[in-house]
Image 1 (cartoon, rainbow, N blue to C red):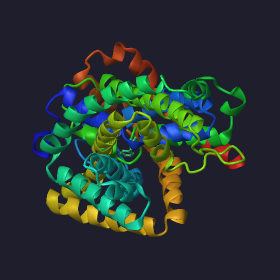
Image 2 (cartoon, rainbow, N blue to C red; image 1 turned 180 degrees about the vertical axis):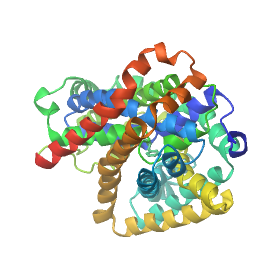
Image 3 (cartoon, protein in one colour; image 1 turned 180 degrees about the horizontal axis):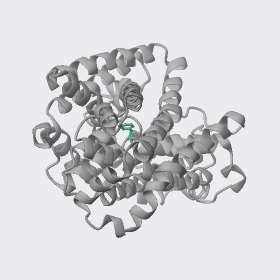
Length: 450
Ligand code: PHE
């Protein structure tokens, strides 16, 4: 069955594709910006705890459910339910996740479009066309619409090509290049004046902020967003993993790669902010809050690149190119989730489905752009801060309570025959059953009451 739906051809291919989904704007645009506006190190600390203690177990729930069902999230949640009612609630959860995936893509494509525009702007500068370069980096409706459509068209094109030729091939090549560029940039930023102050903010926690309900809720959303959870993306990628793979190990690698890149990006963005501040760029308002969070990195990074002189234009070109690619390997996973559902359940061709769903998302993105001030932040909060953790909660409930334990164990044994003797089986089953749902609920309760 799996063969006819497409499957990752190797372990490396899966790890790259799933890390490709996980690593994206969330790591390099979202996480450092949130860290910067939430007290730096305090946010980093809570984020790390939540990523390993909560997001990793939730990721495992999705991967295992996906591989067991070898199908989309709606069918998978239905399959593990022994009862009609749990089956329907599961299907509803799955469908809600797919809608949230589409909404995430609608704002994601806007930001990714900015990345493409900044990349082309570096090219325009190199070819001496300053006017074009300036247009490409100025916040204007037409620029935004144009590049969001370019980005969505690329996403749709790759998803139309299927798992092996599209998703896997792209992810394998470009993820390593992104990592190397980031490391080089981090090393460079450390040499500049002001960087050490940023480093201090990033690494020395203000413990009085660690317990702030808002900070914890933001960090929870950031962890779930960063690992692409709750919306069926990881579930569908899990469904393309072959039965002989050791899932807990693969999930662990993906989590580690994702968290490391977010942390690494923090080492770039926070010092870069303070370098920019040192050079006279206004970043904070009078009350000490960040001036424009959404576009922060589009202010401070170009400032950093400019400080490098001509080589900076090349670095800017490479950086924004890789960011566009990182965004692309994430956006294809967002689109893949609903496309897989529609093609599998309604037997409509993959290409047509991808264009239809992509078209609807483009319309939503344009609506957001036309009402930017009211909708942009609202959709981000609705999807990442609230929907993803709550949907993750449901996936934990299905893996922990609804799915029969012997069937779950059998699934894990496939690629890991000794699983029962290992640490994973001793901890994870009760952990997703009790601890994960309780922590998620507690964080929400605390933020509502606080
Ligand atoms: N994890 C991706 C990022 O960090 C975003 C994402 C969210 C991807 C949900 C797929 C599903 O950029």
